[in-house]
Length: 402
Ligand code: LLP
Image (cartoon, rainbow, N blue to C red; front, side, top):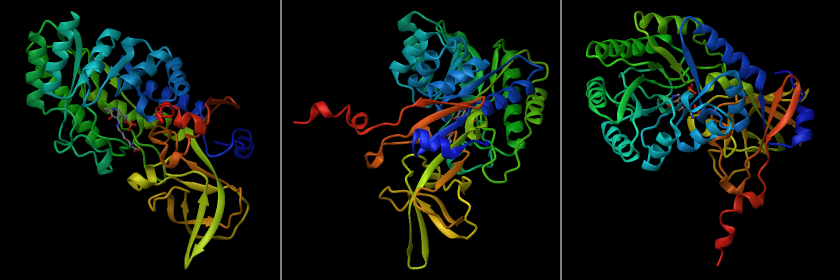
């Protein structure tokens, strides 16, 4: 992104999230094109970045939405995503969420346990509706990614094993209030290996064939999200190869492909801009302290995740340091033992690949307001979320002071 970071930081203040909407367009088109041989639905995983303008941008491109709470479903509907393009997943949906999803008539509910299927059936019966169901299958495949973002093994809490899934499909078929329309599988996030995806899609496709043999014909095969992006120097899965291997597994099946990318669509559209406050040396250790913190962008603290960091000054004198924020936690860092140039007060620091799971995982810890978000499209910048002020943070508490 060759943006004028300094100008944008002056205009909107720091810390600040910047999102390049043209990048999102390119990523969406790349994936959609890769699947052109089939009917497909790219359902954006809203959790990655749920800013309404981001979802709206994807909606304009034709995307659907993969949601994990009724709040996300409502966001998608708010910006005009048609209910028939919305999927609702998650291991712990509450009754109210199931009820609303049924009332909104979304494409399908991804059911993740036998017990949940019973709840959905009950609620659908109460409403006099038929719930369109997809079952999340846990194929027991190691996705070879970070354990915290790995979901496709039986030791993870997600989905059901193949035999349970089969039983659940048969129950759906025999129920007046359940309509089995899809099958779902998502094995993890930031995937850089194609083989585990291939293996799991193959397992799912075999199940689709088995179900067809007993007259349960599914219309949607949801292969989840998970495509990795470059944070450092990762070698990525080629989208065409990805699509090709999925399509090969589906040979002979008349079924619409659904995928649920989050990070792939928005991860590399984002940059987090923060400003240097101070430098200090504790004994031998150099610290660069910036105005952004773990409450704004928690991935390094939470997963030890790497984000490329660049100080935007001309200083050539580099040395090792920790780049840290003002929050009262030793875990509040963006980078440890990284080489950065000597900095001065107000120097800008760019933290890259900050479009996915960054703002959405932000909190108000230490009574810090969530930062502003800005979209850049065709060279034009526009505010898409205001910086929170103190009054916003206390708004839901103030009236209760005794
Ligand atoms: N579908 C399901 C069922 C998911 O659980 C997820 C992500 C996605 C799709 C989208 O995955 P993606 O395409 O973005 O990889 N906070 C972590 C990532 C958590 C991912 C959770 N599930 C991080 O910062 O890396």
